[in-house]
Image (tube, rainbow, N blue to C red; front, side, top):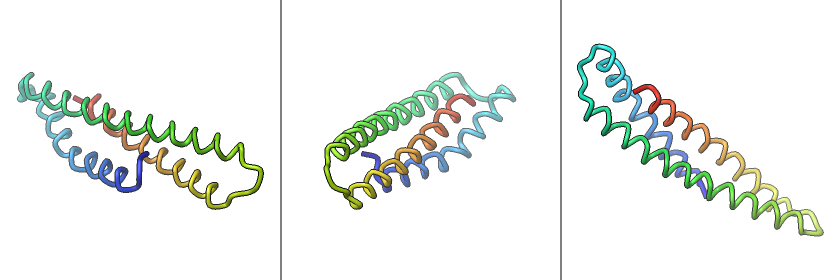
Length: 108
């Protein structure tokens, strides 16, 4: 499940990569970057995106399991409802960070 710490790490990766991607983008426009360098960075981003997507899928499955479990409960469970809400928020954050990585990849 994407935990808050994973989202923080993913946000840091996006932030840390931004200057490198911007530099590659500028150098690419000025035709001062090698194809190998671009390919290496695209591969690195693809691996990060793939891992993030796997984390997202695991979190979505966990959310579905929790929601299914919740639906079977006969009484109210504020704690479970809070856990589901927190997981939904974390998943939305993970989606946003994963989209940011994809956007960086598309720029180069």
